[in-house]
Image (cartoon, rainbow, N blue to C red):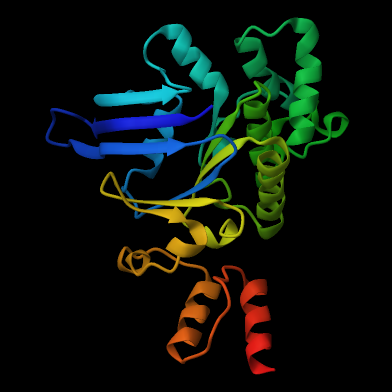
Length: 281
């Protein structure tokens, strides 16, 4: 179920003195099972891109195609896009409203007309896929959970309607290392084992550099760099835009400048450590 944005333009506060371009003549395609990492300076259009994927924003010009069909062609097409493309907001815990975790996760299936007899099993499956034991969490208030647990509740709410794509806006922001690790493991399992497409906006590319397939870099509402994550992380444009790159990439670059032949394109601490040990033997 590919998603394609064709010649998308979107301006915030259009026609006012405060107008600001979100995207300009933007083109983008993601295919089934891909993991796309999206980077860019603040205000580059990253969140604007995500909000176009399931119709939270409607473009001023251009088309958003889901499996070849324009998601804004009808109310039913838009509704289907919002079921198939799940969106996990940055700090989604601020938007939790259910009295219990069960009620929170059940909201999507109930809203999309699932039979009452199917809702409990659907909620249980979604919670467990998001790393939440059903018996332990179903009757707890989401507002009393840790930050990492709240993120997983939000993710379970998305998974409960069986999406084929999950778009996440800086999902690990503010989480402690344990919460970050668990969320990353969950998303990696959904992507690699279940084939769910992942579009992940981040300022911390190190966390997913070894997991994502493709890197998309935005600036001023346009794509300025796109390609293999390992290859594009070495591009000098990232430094010019003030974007962080993994320590392993910086160290490998320094080693090469000093005439050392570094194998491959290391992006994790473990990978560059192995290379350093190999070089000093």
